[in-house]
Image (tube, rainbow over all chains, first blue to last red):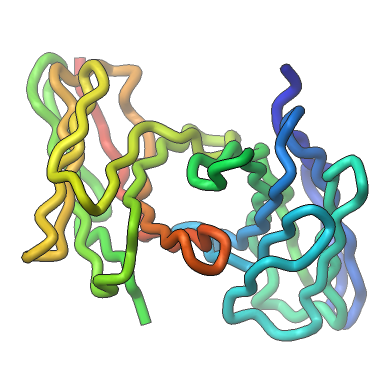
Length: 112
Length: 113
């Protein structure tokens, strides 16, 4: 059984640029959620995808967007990067119940 | 608006003793509560959960207690081991809207040998 993987591990971008983060969900899981974790805080829910459709969204602006592919892998896209977007971005997949989530190691994004 | 609060940023406990991590919530519509553990450079790992219709759930050394009237839950670890040293996140979820999960800020547990 393959766990959740994320790429890249680290990324440095300049304010105003765009970034794409990638996630491969655990085998058999059809639901993917993305979280932003700022330093010293808990993960903040960005959005969730279920079978390629957005299935819930947190309080993040539209410049945060996502995709889920037929193999249930997912992308998080952030446009017009701001300094406050610097954070650890976590991807989590879940199965039929959707309750217990399996997290990837995260992508550390630094915006300068 | 913090719907899930962990008011203790850190906790230090001697090996073999009990660790009690606390969590408060404000939204009475939550259906499930979960605890995740996070080691450095790793994603959070699911530890234990409890349904809002129960008041206790036990799994080995880990027990979660839920007090709905007080909107409070706690995680007990007995006996604590040095390997339990990690950040523990309390989380809450509702089965409406696709199990959107709200996390607390976390409590860093240090278990001293």
